Length: 297
Ligand code: GDP
Image 1 (cartoon, rainbow, N blue to C red):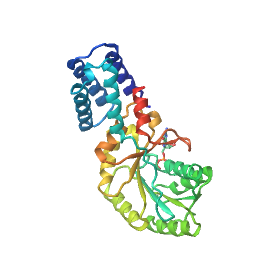
Image 2: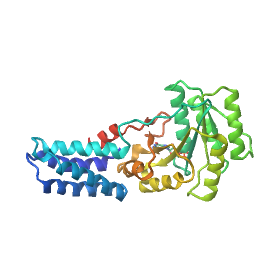
Image 3: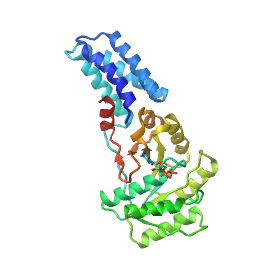
Image 4: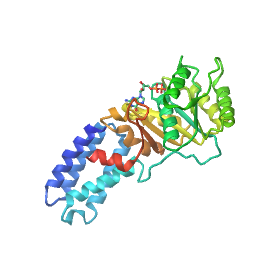
């Protein structure tokens, strides 16, 4: 995860730490290199600017340069700012504080990993939170989408709503809620349809489903490998449906990190989970401190 970025930053910091004393221009030179590393990692430009300004100001305008270990202190400042950029020191878990069945609505583009993530969360809720979860696919666009969730449900031992051919998404959502109530499920996961691009029809459908199901969580699933595009997708959704968080998938293959590093600042939405593989237990609560630690090695 983030190997390229990590290597690049490692080189800059090794140079800094190797020096006994640091001048202001040493810091500025190092920040120029950090800037390039972040841009190559596909971090959004305003985020890079803010980051470099914050680190430079803290490193130069304080006692850091006069201290005995200036290099290490600059690295500590970078670490703190990275954590901030990734969402702060809190791990933002799922909000399950609502009258059951708590509805979690999953949204995102086709191929982002939405259905897989729905099943991963179902498994996590059952195993780690001891919750009775239920899942329903509202995807009537992609052939076999509903069957895919059914198969995954069997694999993770989480019930799925029986498929009624021809039923439309909003009606499936209503039926899912009735069924979740009858079966005394704690949590209902709604896997909505994706599209290849954000379009009006998709947003209208998401709004209608949101209105009938009053979800406690609306989680946007985006592919971290798409970098700034993932952030653009998140921005498009933000104005339309009340997102409560983001799940970044394919973090296992992401050598750059641009989506993770830009998401919070650009969208204001927390990254709640990271998908780290195809297996159904390959999901982690997103912990900014741990992720920053991985980037800085
Ligand atoms: P959907 O169209 O958004 O529902 O996407 P799917 O859930 O069908 O996922 C598309 C593909 O991405 C599948 O082959 C998944 O196994 C794969 N996938 C999903 N999440 C991850 C992840 O975190 N890491 C990796 N490596 N693959 C993933």
